[in-house]
Image 1 (cartoon, rainbow, N blue to C red):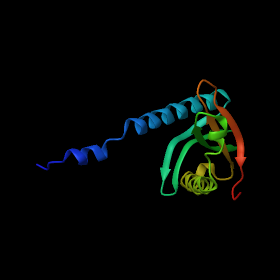
Image 2 (cartoon, rainbow, N blue to C red):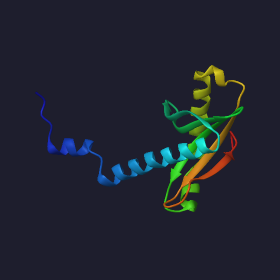
Image 3 (tube, rainbow, N blue to C red):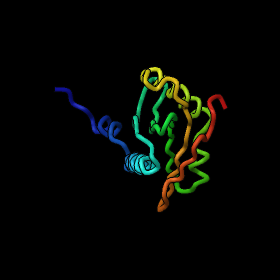
Image 4 (cartoon, one colour):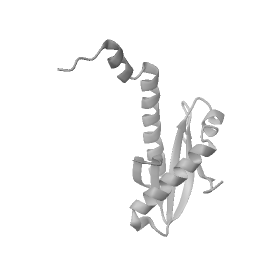
Length: 134
């Protein structure tokens, strides 16, 4: 039997603040999925991961695939500035991987959206927040 020390167990256990942030993020993503459904989108994937990164939500409406990044912060400004150029490039690479693994999506328009979530407000959807390569 392998014994672990208290320090080893503590290192694997997330802090209460980290756990609260993770829960807030999951709740925010669920709220955004419902918002998109109400707007007529069909959710194709959520929390999709690959070697290039994670896509929070992949949704489709008509001939458009929306790659949606969800940001939950205390203010709209903080949420809006949380999507960095590096993160945009990572999402673009992940989106290309997603489409390449789903051949039925070839030929559809890919759009990058951001959804901002702040306390006590409905999520704000920013369609076409940036173009690939910007």
